[in-house]
Image 1 (cartoon, one colour):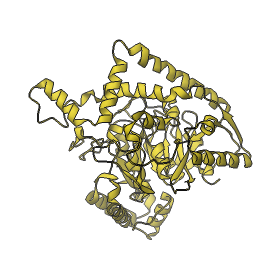
Image 2 (spheres, one colour; image 1 turned 90 degrees about the horizontal axis):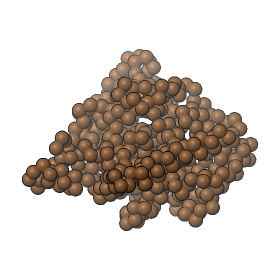
Image 3 (cartoon, helix red, strand yellow; image 1 turned 180 degrees about the vertical axis):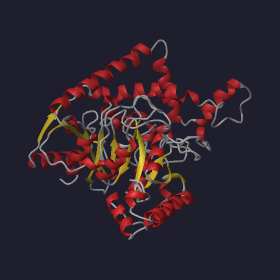
Image 4 (tube, rainbow, N blue to C red; image 1 turned 45 degrees about the vertical axis):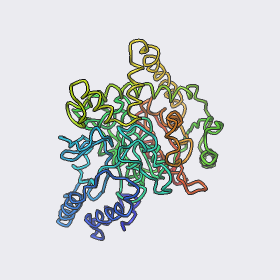
Length: 478
């Protein structure tokens, strides 16, 4: 069994001293993957390739100092979500419509990981086209939570979260559109960071909603999240939406014990829709922060009830546009029952997409249609700006906004599938950062009485990842 290293610092030290080898690490993770195959975490494991990469890294480390001959991530074993392209490897976004599709190029994030000698061990199951909050919308079946196998893993990056939770890799890369890194991180007791929109390149990441999608790491330590952010972030000629702002440097990462002004949403404690254990955990941390000298004040967010509707109108509209390319003609699944061009389109899409993806495409097409564009899509864009302005206004007076990551812990498999609206409401606390384009992090905050992990979220000003990570390191030690 693989030793459970809490941070890459420990791995790097062991590799440099010769106490451990990269090959030994990979073999340990492969054992864990096989032992936990029933959790349905990986759509594909790159076993032979990962072992070959590990041997190469070991050879370079043994030939000299790790710093000179191997990259900043040498020996870090990473899993990637199955909507991130890796040249010569299959990528399906966990959808039948992309079954057996092989990517002809690598995403920028994969190229940056490989350039620093990370070892990619496989591609993780996710909600189809990253649409879901439970990882139950996958063509390959649901991912089960390692803490309780009758519970969901969270979504859409559920496979990535459980891979880290169950020790099948050291860290994982997911994508976060409305909470898809942070919510599964909370359900699985790991750290999930959504950087500011425009911080990490989306080139080679299969699109869901282009004005929201953002790549983010899932880790066991804030230090690793900081290191991965430095490697992944920065300008890229293939993504014109990227910021030119300087990238946070991992060498500047340090625990921040300075006194802060922190706001928390009072609705998180007053709403009947928030689980009692989640409320109790939030209250405990508020009291700990106050006892340590921080100013912690309740705020009311006047647009709270509009967050989820605004997000889903805009995200579904963008999804209907982005997913138009999957037509059964260019690539991917083509219905064997098609007889002409029109039936090729209709049958390939209706057979290739799952029910949740079809639901979102149809709703997105509806809100963009001639008679409803102004009533829904245009209005939602205006509300998005109000939400962003209000969030900026709060962060002019406070350093961070503290909320639960999700209103309840991981729920039982199959329970929420019957009513999609109930599932959508799981994004109530995560979509604010997505709509405003701001960085947010989900931090593990212990377990409830049933042993299910709970998570709390900190939201910061745009491009304030350094401050967010430094304070998160302190927050976890409260």
